[in-house]
Length: 336
Image (cartoon, rainbow, N blue to C red; front, side):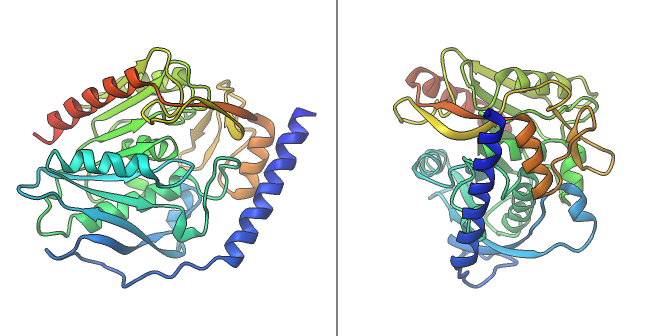
């Protein structure tokens, strides 16, 4: 009965998403291929619409999306690309943009959802994938590298939840190469990512910091601990780090009071039947090889088999303060 409830609601959400996509209209402004000293504010740029890495091997649709570029006054230490989570860009991400600006760091907050006529993936996680968001990050990195005020070697990435899962993939050598990177990011930091991907045998290409709550039941801390251990088992100078904050839940860095999101879907099964692994071509499938998530239809089948609903969300003042101190030290190390 529980699985029937999950798939019924997934199909209902899919119908709503398709209806919204058909009815909504996104009107981009002039597209920028290269930036000038005068460029800041909202910038439209081209990316590729993909669902999984194999889509990049052939022609894929071009999509125009936007990001908001903020340049600090005075000397610029570097730039950070910001990727939101399943709820889309909001006040939390703009607060961090101001926090970084105060430290002399430019920020580029991408809207991965709005240009695709998607408001949220909290209830389905199928319309937009981390691989698709990763293509956006690579395109944004290339765009920022053209700005005369920014050093291409001093561009990092910070993500939240789905955006942090995107950053985790960007930090992996093989995956960022599949996405067509020009150069590795200076660093990658992520708040409470989904880490349900087996990274054994993969190599990090950028220094990585993950921050997650001990009581997170939306994105499991144990899978992130395993991901960091797998990356650090490789012979590379790029190291992965993780902080697990006692008593904290998903969204611990927000000021939101604790609440239950009964409709939010997640995967808590990290056995081989649900843990994901990229095959040699980059296609994501379960570790036992029985399911894959390389298309919208197969991802529905995966969530039907492995997905559950109901998560806890809310801020934690102690974890929020500790994570800001940790993140600042991490950034200072890589953007001195």
